[in-house]
Length: 468
Image (cartoon, rainbow, N blue to C red):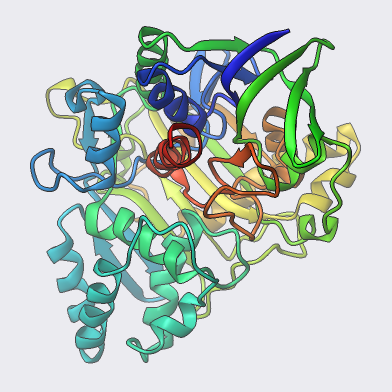
């Protein structure tokens, strides 16, 4: 039976980062991935000769390489021994939070966002600056602590409900698994990632980042087995003794790191581990439409906004909708609108629109109904979302050459995340512990989200549980 120092379940960002970190220290590491492509929730796929990113609207935590050695992105690159220039990160132009009659713009210069808050909410500026200091002083590295309502914490500083909702809209869409609230620690991490540091994107999307991680993992001697999932985590008492692969083979490992998710990992365990399966019911899911054009969006007057977070009323309702899709709020991403410099424009125009969705509705459709509903909702999502963009100077559809759409069913099918919940369980295991002496979580349900957050999680759990 093959034996490893560390077995990692999942070749997503957290699994790859953990693998690199451990292999640097001479650990015999193997990553097991059921899918045929690495990247997990931040991967890519091909359709009709085009590559489509999954999950990546933008990388967060963009800061200048020399501005802060403690910035999350700079820290993980040092620990993974990756040259920052190899990422080829290009900053956003500007993004917006759009509510009826009110826009708050932000860039990677935080002082600009402060000026926007002062312009739109002059009576709230002192409270907002006090909130910022609260966030800056928060210990992002803490792996302990009880849930603290971010809404209650904000209301100590912010008295205007509209500003409160406008701050929550982008942060929740970028990483909250909790209905209409989130842990203040998560809020502080995401506020720093989005506003204090900002957005960037490699010219070719997620693929260069995955290639860099794979290259570094190979160079350090890590082993990777694709199309090789884990069917059972076999425990003896409180310790995992071996892993059974989908093909029936078994392997052993001193330590197991799982990026599969909290409930998903417990469901693999043998003997069975009892947990409250009703926690699946309030998991949040999304749909996303992708439109490809032969023209650049700037040719219609859509050349300024990188990402737009929109909501159609002053009240922001972040929960699973009763309809298949909630058209009231969402995210519009235009990958063309980053500062690509000498690289020029992307070859084609791309517009991505994301909204909250109801998993059960999509799960009940027959195959024919499913594809019919996708076509219907695609048009509805475009109509609802595009209201928050400038009126186009010409008809975008005249140059549309390709479309695609994924639903919660798509996410569940290709990532094995229950109910297509990309942000996982609302209960986060900050220390990675789930009741076994040598089995720990990394990734989404450990508590860090996004490309950078996932890599932070992988490194943190490797350091805490496999190196010490």
